[in-house]
Length: 479
Image (cartoon, rainbow, N blue to C red; front, side, top):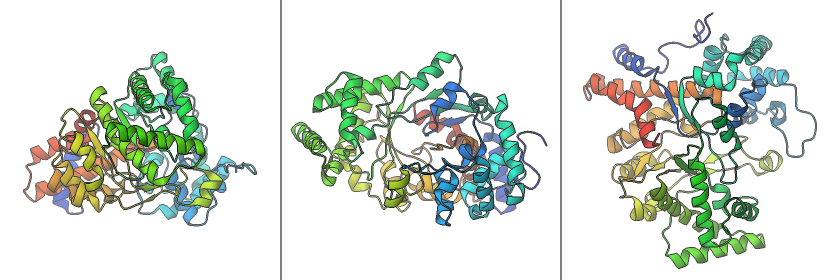
């Protein structure tokens, strides 16, 4: 079996293309022109330590399963304990199962992922990266575990080699303002030419309901030399850290707020709100309405700063994080217990857009977990305001169906060029090529339908396919 080629019967070359033979042929032709374009990954959550140290990944379970909340949430929903998947409890009672045992548990439940995007990505990784016959099953669990382990020990499977093999041109990680970015510094100092950049995620010092918010402000002050417990000092601390992040390649900020609410208060009102937030933090009683008001104002402040320094502003709202309170208490964040919530955009974004939405020098990229807002709110907004662009289908909707729904619900109002192509927004490094491949196939399928219906010449569809796969994300994120 040739390394990197699909195994017999595993990954069909026409997967995700239309069933109609004529339309499928058009999609196949378009895809052939974009499949090998470099990958632009302008927003994600991979660990920069991997590329700084370039050490071998340890084992299949800790690499592919335990940290992936798409996997853990599905297995937990079917009664598999998180401990059995190697997820460490906060009280750290008992030893974690051996990686091989975790992998066997996963193989025994692989059927649960039938029809899901997780199955699509994992099949791709197993077949294309490791050359393993799929589907995974209990009978081949040990054999696949051993094969992956053997490959991970080889130099060709170290992080930097895979970055190059995957054809990634640029990859953005996401760090807190309190991060020292030492791993990014180590990457720079190593002389390796791979382009790993950071993104500024200020939530720990913007959301008053973050655990340890007051301590974070104190640390923010120490890192910047500004008194972040005063309004002017707090804003200056942000400017200082944004400039620091820019030195390590950052071209964007990212904001994971519960809602898309923005505000545009007067200077005295802003300062008074900040003082109330600090006092509440000092008293240990952060007020929900107060916190929401402050987050709303800070999105507008971040837009103001983006006009100053040129960073792209990303808003990722609408997730009710850690919905399962008992599980959060035992295991913490990112275990699969975040749930999408209905989200308003028209009213919520209006203060920011009235202030800065007509600025052509500003780019605000908005994502949603509320698909009902695509055609009703987001596409009309992006189809009007010069500063606003639509991020691709995100998180729960980063699936073949979700990617297609995004195109169907936004193109008629916002077109293609008020969107920003695709970004994978993942912690799962090995799935990045699979996600981009799926997005390119779906976009080519959507475009093929327009061609087949004589709504778009094939030559123009090809240009759009190239733009969506490569040019638009580079342009939108100023890369």
